[in-house]
Image: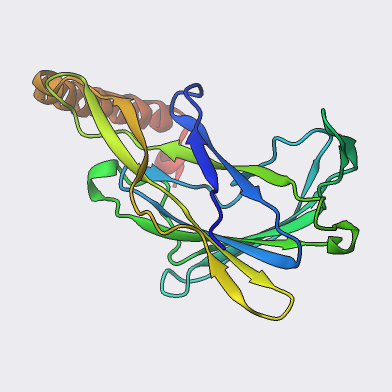
Length: 231
């Protein structure tokens, strides 16, 4: 059956935002897969990609494996969540393992105009599914930490990044798969501050000049303490 997974991006955080996800738990479903595209102008740091917003939850990093760009990368986390009382009834949210798969190792130092899109998949494995019955459906909440890149200067000192809507898949005990409603579209339009394109040349030449002055001063200071003259 279709699942209506909700995703939204924090307004706060500046260049570092949390992309929140609410995955509805369904009895019999043991694994969930959240597939989403990180657009040009954003990236995820595999050393710290996960944030959980559920009360008293504890996140523990299990491993981070980065291979050659051809093979991508994987990082794993264990999230422990105790039982808590809902406003209307007593429910439990299970602890789970979260595995993030990246199709390509992302270069976090690249500027936005030379970086590409990245395909990422969150695999969520429930650890204590036996506590659920038909009336125990609840929501699993977590957030992906997104970082914005510095965009190319603009005449209006502002630009926009379209963040695609994630897709949700699930696997039941009998290995039957189901998917979220496939309504591909944009989850958020993210406003990003940019530099003034009219200042581009002035900033570039000033930066180069300052760099050359710094190199000259460094070489002068090194020559004062060097032992080259004694050789």
